[in-house]
Image: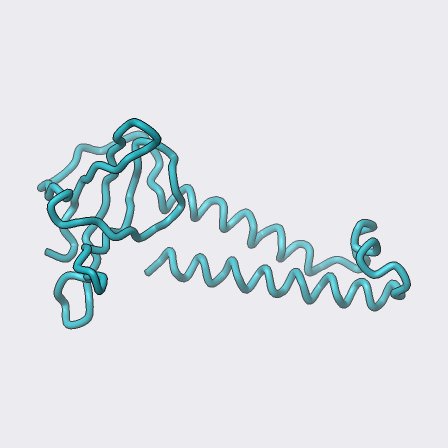
Length: 141
């Protein structure tokens, strides 16, 4: 059922790792399924730090539904992603306050004026900031 806490095994090299997740809700309130019938699971934490997908597709026969897992001192997948995304947002926000493009930026446009370099740099920072804000929105579901 959507919202159920599940665990499942996945391959890592020649080993098997475990992941904890929550079953995604699909359109109409039922299970969120891929066209091939796999169940979409939002990852909470993994036993290995493999992969960065927040939502994965898992075969129904690989999922074990649990009533409640004990609290874990390990950070969740979303908290790690959130911290990384928030650091990037803070960095690009700070970069947008720049009054001069970094020295290395001129390597890509050797004949450009300082104003053109700054405008190009700020436009790039704004695009990157938008990308990370969208990632944060996706993380929040």
